[in-house]
View 1: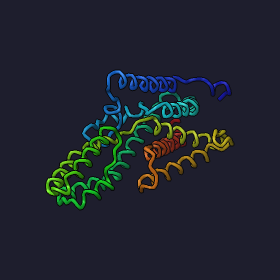
View 2: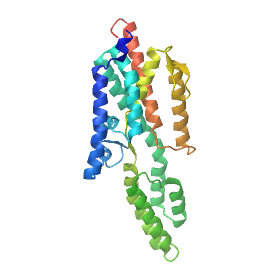
View 3: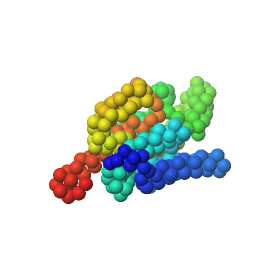
Length: 283
């Protein structure tokens, strides 16, 4: 590969950049002018949520949550994706990108299952044998609001429940029971995953596997590091943050397991293609 070719814009990367940027602009325009949140329809919902659709496993990776989100994803796609496309060709690169993106979505669905399952079990247990003594514990452990609609719904419940529980415990318990019946589907729907990060992490993984000793210059801190160490460190950070988020030590509203899923699917796909090449099939 010549030095000048490294700075060309191959067609798949170029079109992916265009699609992602246009999708980001369109979602902003539709929301600001029509009041429609595109994420509700095209973002990846939990599989048990009312708003889940299988097409979301593809569409979610073309949506982003803000300028920083799309900028860093598209910057990484431009920096590393164009080199991979020049090595693999457009068709294979696009297949890799989509598989890593879909794989990240599937991984996030599995992570959400283990994250939300305690909530589901607690709800079922409470509805089977409800008591006012358990209401506060349920609120402290499981009531999280990820959108303004849920926040308002929760606050209305808390205000009304606290106003009547002392004077009419039976009515308060009935109200609490209905709240958790109504809140469960809302809670499921509030978990929405968007972004190309899973596919981008797959690209970083592939770059590290194909060019393990190429030196990258980090911005923070500004030191050179081999690509293989960069990928390993990034993967370990995501693993730590994913575990920390699950145990409640750290929460940042980032789909760390989706990032790891993109890397995992990318790893196995690159390994498969390498084995095919070693068996003289193709590369």
